[in-house]
Image 1: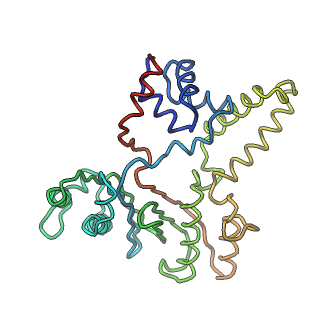
Image 2: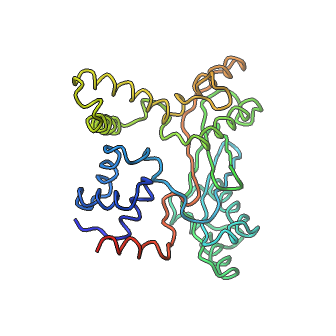
Image 3: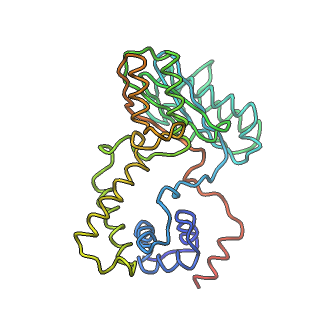
Length: 303
């Protein structure tokens, strides 16, 4: 499978590795991007795969909660100047309210939604004509339940957390706890809710990578397979603690996990509380920004 300068650039952005290492990985893996990421991790050259979601576009993430409904929407623009404008933010907030009220099934349905005699698509087009910059609703999520929201850094990161509890959605203590957990999610970016949420194939792949890393280490390579297996199980436990929300160390009180913090709060309030789900958006994550000179630099290396 052939690869291009852009592929080398993309692999470098995903892993943080040097250009030559990325080129070698793609050569070894016949241009397969996912296999190249695993190759670099096995060699101990790449950091955690979380870095794959780099911010690469301007825009804002906004949330809206009312009447047992929580909404989060990401609206993108070409420049930070436009994204920080009042008109742009007003459009994002208006779209969030429309999603809450009309519950569109998908993006096409959302664009067709009407309010005040204009479709959402028309609203986007109207703002485009006013500022002459490409604007796009990238994604949205709508949740019905006991939902708490949080927006970080004026729209850089947004979080929705859904709880199962007898408490009212606007209960002051629930909202306070929910915002603390949402801030945890914004800061620590957990990939899963709990251990049960982690797909079996993810754990198997993680084990394969860990074993490959140890076999590359001269100090570990000659250890018996049973010893390596025990070490891997310990590292998988660490993986859960780093990547599962309820297993993470609670950033406000390091003596607790997030799960224990929820239990403690529930006991104090005399009501059961369970985290059902969460959604985290980071503006522009995964969208490739235009790079003027870097592609040419990489192209010269591939020739």
